[in-house]
Image (cartoon, rainbow, N blue to C red; front, top):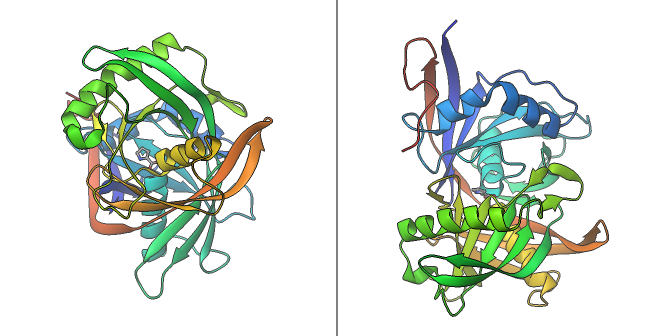
Amino acid sequence: MASHIFECIDAHTCGNPVRLIVKGGPRLEGNTMEEKRQHFLQEFDWIRTGLMFEPRGHDMMSGSILYPPHNPENDIAVLFIETSGCLPMCGHGTIGTITIALEKNLFQPKIKGKVKMETPAGLVEIDYCKPKDKVEWVKLTNVKSYLAAESLTINSSKLGDLYFDVSYGGNFYAIVDVQKNFSGIHDYTASELIHLSQEIRKKINRKYPNEFIHPENSNINGITHILWTGNPIDKSSQGRNAVFYGEKAIDRSPCGTGTSARLAQLFTKGVLKIGEEYVHESYIGSKFVGKIEAETTIKRKMAIIPSIKGWAKIYGTNTITIDTDDDPYAYGFQV
Ligand code: PYC
């Protein structure tokens, strides 16, 4: 059969899209979400490209598919599908997926107000507020996050030499703080940041090959995201970022894994303390509240357990057909 039908519910988390595939997702093999992620990448990646890339998606599109948990103590398991691949963890994706799933009664949490969700990066514990039909907020307690490297350098053909740190918050981020050759995201358009990011991400991964590998899961490796910082729009916020992902995307949300990486960086450098809140703005000014819940270690390295609180809104349902026999753009394209 060449015509594949996917029932989707579309939402956005603080401006960034989340397309939850509620029917049509593939059956995957594996005893963990990481094993299922590998199976998906080997055999079903066309579903991701078909649903995320143009003409059915766009540069920022991201989505997810729900699976039953592997450990019966947990409530649900998730696969993230994005323009950038199948991320081990996605914060805005989690907030959107949980909001959709709870509002549409796609599963029943064992304990009201709490969800234990398996992700490829590890277990994520969630609190939520749903007084009636709508979810007001979702707070996720993320996987262990840590600062992996400080004060590395890269040359940007436009900006000159740049310093950056590398931090992990569910994905590896190169964090470019305001410095002599970079005055902050408030001075750049999104498309300028995209062009700058495309070049430096390539150069960083070339200059520092095999350097950033998760100590407990070697499938998670390499710099996939660039987090640029700058002045908040609202003076009461603590920070603002533009996160580059995929080939041409700037996150419209403040980026959950990026905020986690930022918290780990600031904690390790002594800027933030346990229990302190960090209101993080996105490029468009939407906000997540980040918090360092606890200090921990990962393979004897200092790490934190961050939490991220935000909201999402459902805006539509979508029945999408991918006709692999008849449609020349069945698997999507990027320009
Ligand atoms: O919220 O973690 C996130 C995220 C990753 C890529 C885009 N958003």
